[in-house]
Length: 251
Image 1 (cartoon, helix red, strand yellow):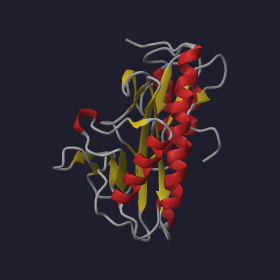
Image 2: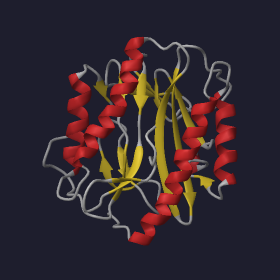
Image 3: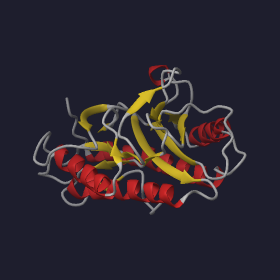
């Protein structure tokens, strides 16, 4: 069932969203060669808790860490550990925070040092895919309109659009209805209504769209080992333009 959020609900979600945004801003200052993904996780958890929230991902369906850190060919759900970032890497950091009964969820892909131009372009276009998609995150459009816009923009650049992992509704639960795929047909799917809250999150691959899961039971990687980028924000459908709850300052 899709839940329509009240104005009071949305203000609570905005608090959670700001904590997610601030955590990602902190991560942007920490990602550099030699830093381990475990160190990023530790600092993210410390910060989230310092703001009175708890990490949404910690122990979610058994997930063992507070954030997801997905490096290079890892698409999503990379588990923080001993890996040390190195020059030329990219890393997707996915953060969730829970406070006052509501969740916020967002992701950014960061460049580490001297990243190849074709990978920089992938990261840039993935972010652009998000903004192409949310042109249709308005009352009266359908979920398929968002997915179609993302897919069309990514594929026009020759990239693969991951099918197995998608965006989602969000609120009192981290994952709610409706599903929000990064592909689709215009005019299809759930019609958007004021007060719906969704997480839109393009996951775009430099090569094939095909992915698989590693033996850790979480980490998703590209089948051709080419890099993947991820960009996500939580937003609410309004009478006009969508309100971004995890992006109050351009970043």
